[in-house]
Length: 270
Image 1 (cartoon, rainbow, N blue to C red):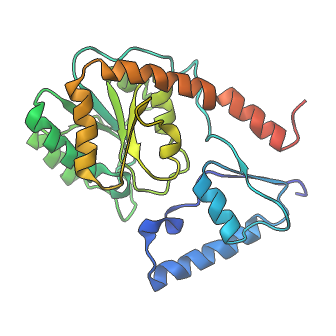
Image 2 (cartoon, rainbow, N blue to C red):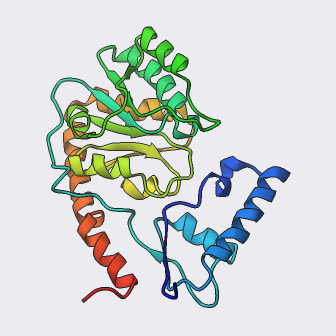
């Protein structure tokens, strides 16, 4: 196949700071770089979602010649399928949607929920996502323990996240995983929900702090609790910032706009 185009949705955990600098991590990263160089050889275009992946592709010289990565704003979101809705007046209800992995910030979410509930016992904290075979996976026993404690509502899994997004006030993803641009956040933006997420590649690209959400340091439980408490204290804040989320989705993450960028980059546009 002479004409090849590549979409790097995220280089993965091994290129993150969390992977560490151990001999094993360096060896795996070296092997991954060699494999990426081989896979991307002769590419017409290589699309990336965020600055960190762009930087790593350049730093490790994964592309040949003068080819540079082409930045796009994630996979995009269907703004017709994920319609805007006002958040419920009751609450607040916080929702996290993710694979049940430690690196996604599940423990930090639960610990922050404990703190917030001391001042706002009416606040609800929901978790939606499937169990995973990853070594950092959260166990069913851990989830059940949090549910029995009354800290968390575990919603199981679903093929349609829209009703859950419509029923929440604030979307939370305290990930310290090496993300591309999380699709779960894009769907929350389109629905008109403010987002609390971490200052990491991919996640921070979806939030303008104070405008459509809040950004906190990874693994900072106190900062995450403070951000959630701000919404619990001001019932109107979620609606105000949620409108800005929808505007950002329309301006930056519309799937039709993203598709046009992809076709243009592949020289397939009319």
